[in-house]
Image 1 (cartoon, helix red, strand yellow):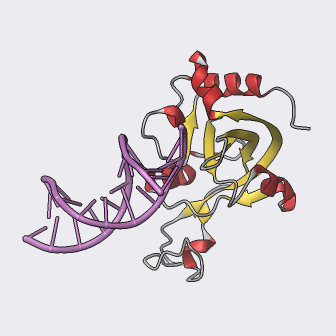
Image 2 (image 1 turned 180 degrees about the vertical axis):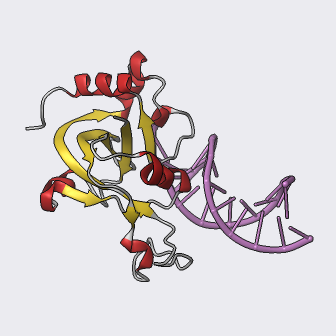
Length: 156
DNA sequence: GCCAACGTTGGC
DNA sequence: GCCAACGTTGGC
């Protein structure tokens, strides 16, 4: 099993939105970066662990645990001219953007970016690398275990 | 709002 | 295929 960290802006789609979603599951729509797409298309497997990360907000950090819940399939928003994620160069016959479903495991306390940076055992996390902007990054088994340990119990 | 870092685009 | 210009990300 592999592990991943997936960023979402809580103003757009938060851990609470995921908790309210049908079956607590959402298609991970809107990714328009090839490397992140390739992770979803080629590397993710159903059941892989996901750290749900809140970005571009007052206190960025890990907000919950989730799982990959489907294989890859086309992101519908690329075909919708009214969507901000519309891609006129993509066709249904040859869709450019694929996604996977993500299902909530549990909401946790917020584990702030600042705390991630402060932990020596997490120092090598890809998401912490200088200049990193990838919205999906791999997480090692060791990092996953260390994060889960620090997350502790569920959010009240 | 600033700005460093990075990905993408497009002219050549 | 190079690379400058531009746009975006995302922490601060």
